[in-house]
Image (cartoon, rainbow, N blue to C red; front, side, top):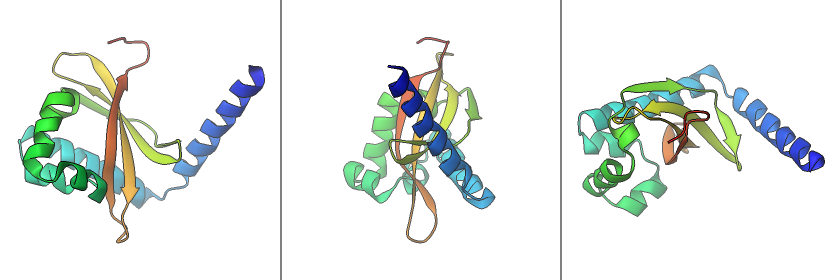
Length: 139
């Protein structure tokens, strides 16, 4: 068990190191993409919010209206956040992930794990988002 824990800690440390190697402009672009999508959610601007989704996400949801309906239903904390706080980028299961602590409309903090994907033109788009319980806070 101790060996497994040590191996997992090594993988997490390596992932954090890889994420730390991104240059300042990439980190800023990732943050801007997420902030811009959240701002679009706040304005109910589905077209603008959908623009920050990766091609894979766009192929799943097909259009801004379908995408926004899913966000309204399943992602209330990022759709209507009361507070947003960015954490350090991480590599999780080979994916570049931007953790963002979000306090949703109910006042319960959650962490939104944004999977970020660099496009061929160098831009960063959101390839997915998972909501997880904020450690120590409970849901």
